[in-house]
Length: 390
Length: 146
Image (cartoon, rainbow over all chains, first blue to last red; front, side, top):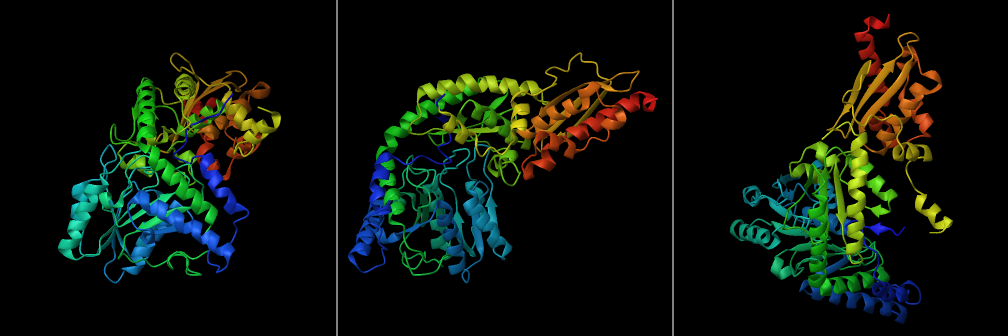
């Protein structure tokens, strides 16, 4: 039986064309990009070309891009970097309640160190409360960080509208109030033009866009300063110490270029499959869609199925070689149900009963039909065992 | 798929073979409790925490041994497997006496399951507690079992 991989939001495979571009830098072109000699220059050239490629997709200058070791690292650098650089100008940070842990945990850590953090509520579909944002902004606000498209429920935030509010407040009040967005899930599906989005900082990574794991980037608008988190040899304009990994950076840039190029056609294809899958999953009694019905990523399906616990469901599906994920506590290291699902106001019981399926480039209608055959059977089996009768 | 590939696919499972067996092929569960006449019923857990289970027992009036133990569980794989294993422990070899059943501990279920991942033990092994509640329910209804 073939594996049906429907966890593309967790990570993607590396596109063969991307891998091909990376290979020389894993073997022959191994030089340290900081070295003066030809071997070093060769790696440096590749990295700087990659930087330009990434900048083109984002509509910014190459020097506004720094490469990091992951999306998490970029988010950490944005949050800690801004907080530590501008702490004399203010100690207030605003984030949404549905941030990825990369931002959420960084903000919590700052809160423990004495920073003040406002956590914005979201509505039942996962959209940030704009009025609450307006009210939360104050003279002390140094950073606002809101995820572009949520990794669990796929809800897409109106980033341009939010950045406008933050910018207007900045101009009016003189507060630092910089705006960062985590766009890891948005890449390859949504517009990444930083000028149109109006963001000051933006995080991207390789592992969600058919590029390699272990690489990300942070867009830092000209004039914005950061205190580095990793110090060392002064690489990446002194903002990220450590020898740059040319293979990963080249792969990341290639993947981003490719993802951006096909995003419109691929999003359309996936949205068709997504809507077909959602429509049919919801035929299961007492099931509900989590996240926004329209403003959602083209590849994201998140449902709660009453009476069935998510980890058990995911493991049953795994037996049928379907790879899916869940927001149930049992699948997490913390044994707490998904903070995102709780933030949209569903009960803990239904958060434990959630199932996320995320589609990707290799997803076919045939695979979707296979899921639609297996899932109701598995749900029925677990409901037969379950003490929560519907 | 080759055997070798199969092995790789199976590797890294957090659960033992026994857990998997009881999860995929649960024993003694009660699909429909309507009309099922039990001598004692007990519940444990809460849907808020992600685990809720109910246990029904039938007790032989002569020998005071548990002759049937049924259950229903809303919960993760280890919660389902531990409920199933509990029902086997209680009813095998002619069934446990009530005194024996009330002494079943989570470690007894765990050991028979071939262990569980550390973070699963406290939250998902609730079978013995629901069982104890069922035994207490029986004793309450039957004049202390005398």
